Structure formats: C-alpha cells, structure tokens
Length: 288
Image (cartoon, rainbow, N blue to C red; front, side, top):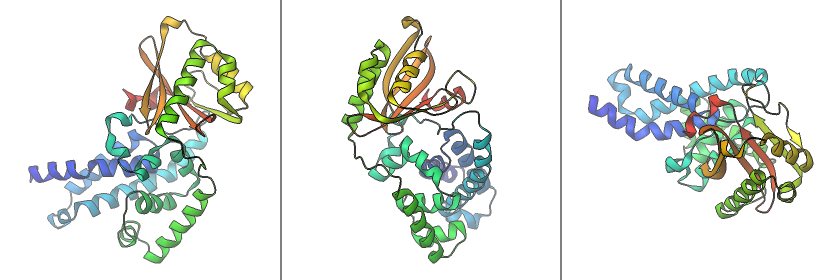
C-alpha cells in the first residue's frame, strides 16, 4: 500500500500542481491544494484507489474553483496591483514541455486568465492545455458535455480577443532582457526609452510590503524615470541575473545577496510593451 501511494504521488503530482498553478496563479496555493487532494484520496475506500488520476483531478479542480471565488475578493482588497506568483521553470522543465504548457505558464497568459470565470478557466485549461476530453471534464465539474463545449467556446472567445499577436522566440526575449538589464543598471535613460513602446505599462506587485508603485504606470518617460529612480542603490549592494521564470528569460534581482524581486516582460521581439515587477517577499519563495 505504501509503495502504491508513493507511485501515485510521483506519477500525478506534477500534473496536479501544473493544473492548480495555472488555475490560481499561485505556486504556494497550488502546492497546498495538491497536498489536500492526496490527503483526501488516502482517506477514501479502496474502490476509489482504482482511478487515482480521475479522483485527484476532480478534487484539485473543485478546490481551485472554490479558491478562485474567494480569491477575487482577496484581489480586490490587495494593496496595489496583484500579479501571479513567479515560478522558476529552469528547474522544472516539465512545466514547459509542450508549446501549450509553455504558453500557459507565461506571466502574460496567467494574467490573461484572470479575465475568465473560475469554471471557464477550468474547462479551458483542462481541454486546451492538458488534453482532457469532454467526457472527463464533464465528470470533473459535474456538467454535461454540451455545457462544457459551450463554456470552452465562451472562454476561447474571451481569450482570443486579448491574446498577444506577437510570436516571440526565446532568443529574442533573452536579448530584450539583457538589453533592459544593461540599460537599467547602468542608468542609461535613452537606452531604456528605446526599448519601450509608446503605450508601455509598468505594473509592480509589492503587496504593500516594500516600496513600489501602487498603480500601473503608463508611458515610456514615466516608466523609465520610475525604473531608474527605484535603482538608486549602492552598486555593490545590487546584483541581477537573467534566469528562466515562467518559461521566459526574466531579470532576478538581489539586494545584499538577498532575493529582492523579479522583472518579466511582454515584448514584440524588438520593444517592450508590458513590464511586470514582483517584489512582494511572500511571492518569491519559489525562486529560491
């Protein structure tokens, strides 16, 4: 029995975590839900153990849907903008094994999913990202297959209107990140301005725990001045490197050798139109 439990945990943990993380945008909450699902599975009768994937997926999805309903209220009360919790994917390549997985774990896509209702998010991710069939999904969320098709159609329509029109290679993203890092750390205002689009938006998530803009900043001039102003720190105390975060090159900053924050981008391959900064220390544990 103990060996079977270990095998099931090993076999399905990554899948369940992947679903929960994309549903919630929080690795911490996703881990808690996966643990809760396994606890519930262990408490069930032996008959339930014959189909662990179906049972565990059901528990994870339903717990995530419940969590999302309360999360909307929490986000409204959050101090400043709320952004997803960054995930260091260079050490968990299974999160980006396929094109669908890589896109769905990107910061831009996780933010885009916030436009979907909890049920829409579940059906979309299960079908389009994790290849669950309509019969499986219908059983998981207790809806008819026809209803699931309607929900998926609605979700695709909502996302299709907002999804990025740019297909940017990893090399292009890494080049942009390197140029951004060089310009920002050297105080090169003109270099930063050249990297930003006219409609660039800067969004920082501090949770009110460290100093950061509590509203999105619009326009290249304001974004550049804000970035350079925030880097007025003794150079010996500030260190930054480019690492793979959420499947894309991002800048990870350290202050006095302590992890301080992460900077991620949306880009057309030549210039940046969205800058996301997460400095809330409670959201950085999965980068260590």
